[in-house]
Amino acid sequence: MATRAAQNAAANDELVSALHERLVQTGEWDRVLEALRRGLEESGWDASLREKAFEQAKAQTRPISLLDLVEILEIEAHTSIPPAVRSEVTSMLRDFISRNVEDA
Image (cartoon, rainbow, N blue to C red; front, side, top):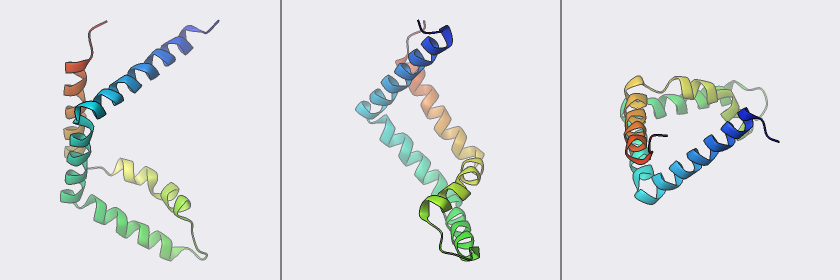
């Protein structure tokens, strides 16, 4: 028999999957992605990260794989998202959830 934590995790996974499906079906997923892309481009985040990737690749003594480069930059990429961009995307997702999830 599954533990309570496992049951909750499974229910959470189902909810996330259903929300993602609804985001895609309604076109909201595309709007969220466009807002994210626009915000990152306007803030210079993408250019800055691209420059850091080039610097990392040049600093290697041996050729580096794309997967290794992504692993090196992943944490910095996530933590350096501008607060205004993060806030806008989070707000869009929260609004969608509030419109599409019934109170339990």
